[in-house]
Image (cartoon, rainbow, N blue to C red; front, side):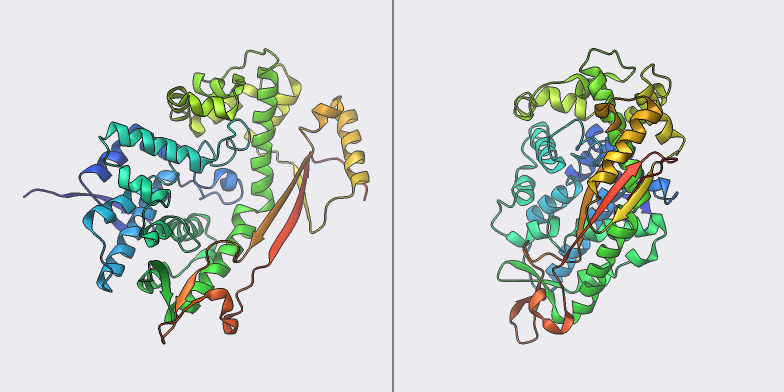
Length: 409
């Protein structure tokens, strides 16, 4: 008997099957295997200890859900060729391949290239390696393919990426508010006039999905302690880069060193794609944590303090407000930090972190979720007043600083 697929045992969905061929070959590729070494939710395990799952887990889960969605659409008479199904599967499998260590920390610190652009870059180079077998997947991923609903399954307000990460992240964090009825939502999907739509009887499941997403952002992704830990990591890398650019020889891996010492512009990095991908594809959480362990004993007191604070979970105090922090309070804190740690004003800003974050349950600015009514009308979900889907942006302000200080204001 010839076995046509590989089986993975996933704790969220049970057994996931991946057919042998291009999909399995991509999973086996070192660039994809690197995702095993990148945590899905960054520093969130400092708050929820079980949140140690990886981008590898998530990519396989999203692929599994896309397979279910394709089966559902086909059962409702939507014609999807084997080539289109494979292309959409490749696109969702590789949608996060451009993520760096700890998900977003490197993206905001050392590499000024969005992970989505890097994912496209990875896919283009893999297309060359596999003799053009990813060409259609790239068209679907970049929304160049005329059947728009395939792209909506990959990237949209109701895509398989969100379906998996909400379900998976709630599973591993233990935050039950994030559990969604993904299976029912997928069963309610169909295509009308080339767009992905939800049948009217699935509206309440969509409401639950949107509410769960909003709660997960404040309770998990933007949890003040998790955010404080990520900002501490970012500041540690920022301090290391500042020292590197002054000529310090830092004890880091070759691949991390490439980004710490590199002064090339984003355009220059993108022009030298082979070099960029060689170093970026070898970079993962291990490089960062190994550097942190070496930084804790580095002669620069500020870098050492930041690294020790992160490694030993001596996290900063984090205050959250609905309005910007008073500037007199900021100046007072900066002065206390300068005196307490014997730092200059510029150095003190590595220990005084200000961040503003926004969250919304649903955005009408993006392509809306569309509902197929029983009379065959297609209506944006925001216009179905009975269900009161709101497009309200909530902004919160975070201030992080070492414990033991006494801010005024």
